[in-house]
Length: 433
Ligand code: DLL
Picture: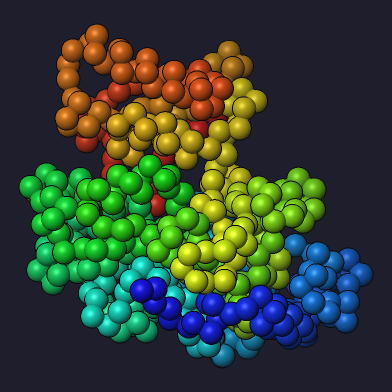
């Protein structure tokens, strides 16, 4: 039986949801106009006032916000309340430029944790479960967000944070953890380590995993499910909008339901900004409908995705997004061809490899080069050169048919690629260095 955390919202009729979204949007636009001079100026430049926005159909009139706006407005420029009403900040890892700092009032945290509680409940979680949270705690939103959701559901919560893999495994077994929350790459690593310790899927008490924060392929899901003997659910979110729980997967495991009573989604053409019809692939844009401290309108995520209102077997009516293909800024352009790391991952896993790989891009004599280093699994490990060459050629062919590009493939020994405890870094683009 499917369980819901907030059934009235998760299964609302289309009319109820739309009426709520319209009501919240009008209030939110007024709130931003009155309290966020940075965005008000953008609206004025576009010649829009709150009176022009009567429903979500008018959203396209509003200006976009992008990561560069967040950097320009750092740290307080997009704050929608007095600082004394805020109780927390969280922040992105910010590999380039300034970090994004997001602010929360107590109510903002409350609705964020509700979103995470919906995700945990959709993965089968109840107050009888033990939920181990191996996302990082601290400025990263993964640990704190799911921790709050787990409390709301009433699970016994184990806040291990990431790292110290053998201790993670000890807690899972000693305290009979039934739900594991971490990045998919860390889940794969935990599975690998358990295997080394002689633990098979039937020896582990886990029944479900809630994995997100990075793009992962359907093939990787199968792999993790088999190794850990669990059902693996996807979860999506970003710091700018609160953190994990913007959308979450249900028992159907076919895309994530967006918590659209809080986050209104659009898909746009990333080049022209034009809003695309449902079912088209494009850049996801979100409007936070009720966050007060950091109320972003039409925020461009750079995630490439497809929305769908197809009826879902779980009974939820919340709109769904397909697995994001990756970020537009993760997309590599190699010899003029668009390549997402997730496409390479699909080929590798379809050929029996695990998701331990590195993509190295370079340029020689003005031509881009694509090198894929992938680990052999312990079962396929061999020093028979003929065998290795045959395997490499199979992968070159597989990548050619997926990408339309010739790549160089190098098979490396098991465990020679560094494991990640958080978001995996898979691409090294030497053209940028
Ligand atoms: O990664 C929040 C989060 C924590 C989500 C835990 C899920 C679980 P940021 O560090 O701000 O926030 O990174 C956000 O990560 O724009 C996507 O590009 C990517 N991302 C997040 N979830 C998924 C997912 C957290 N399920 C950025 N699939 C987003 C693919 C994801 N990409």
